[in-house]
Image 1 (cartoon, rainbow, N blue to C red):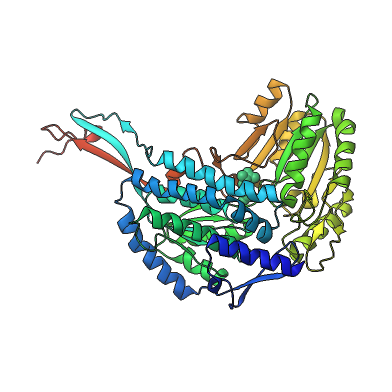
Image 2: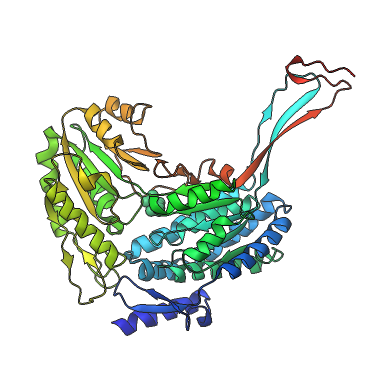
Length: 504
Ligand code: UN1
């Protein structure tokens, strides 16, 4: 088995155009969570090579920012084409490196293609406003200008899509990009970059160093985050990471887009379509083995439907297939590593101590000792206490019974994170209350679908400890540009605003 997986990785990297020298013979080891075996040895960057990359990116930015935006869009159009051609291979590599089931590996690449399409259209729509001036013979408007070098820090769980959300927007916005992928998923980063390089080659005259990847750990991240030549850091990962990165960027008056932890919840109301809710909850809570930032982690179920829904959910938890996603057709693949498994067990122990009734959560043997598979856990909790208040990056769903919707919404909002949320109801009043100013406090609030699996067309991100950043669709592109307010006087007079007189 292990030979086969290594060989498959090599095969995929060859086909995707990543030279063997980039992932063999180095000191940074890469493992697949599918079997736990080592699949690559990379040569890590250093603070010095990162600084050199930033200097190259800065020079590239100065050339790129004056390329007309629709022409910049052409590069992203070509990237979308190359991604379409590479979809099967890159999706398979995501599955090996991040442990996703095949359709989720492919889905992640589809998300990259979608954002490319979006960004191509955007390259002709970087609109500013025209604004009425209070002065005669004057005109006001807004211009959106490129920002500079964008540093992208991404996590293991969406190893390539998050880069593409940032890069597709940053490139049409006229910026250069430096990407520091998770140390756990460097191979998919190198592969994505090889795909972009093919697009750059076809494009022809893009400046050298426009988009670069740096591989390594905190020292490399630190060099990127602290550099005054990187005006924007877009960082996806834990709230703990955000607490380090955010203040560092702010201290130098840089801008950051933070997409951090989620402790996402759903509310199941008396009128809910329970069959539909069951499926949505199953995907939201167990999909990607609970390792999405949008994973459903808390569920508030109205007392009148608790007995009709929760036993069915427990049954689904007991029977869902867990195993090697590349071989067995399982729906739940591995946790990323031993630490993730230990964190899951610790949370379950704490939940039990807080009065929780745990269903599932045990290790599932696959014959590979260094791979960590767990049966997803559903925990019936008497209240929202202990580990329920924290994000544990594993498939644990805490279920709490409620009587009044106002109580459910209060509990829903009573956690640190504020990423995604959903309500299951056929009652218009309940749905609209949940979406209202007094409802969910999250960046994403859904009705009759789960918390995960957002489309790229909407702005993606959340409030509070989730960091407040927005990526992907809607007007998230504005975060990657600088706004300039312009006032133009085409009269023969010089009236001052606010009626100020200053005659010399
Ligand atoms: C993440 O987990 O960091 O909404 C991103 C979703 C995906 C993106 C998740 N489209 O679940």
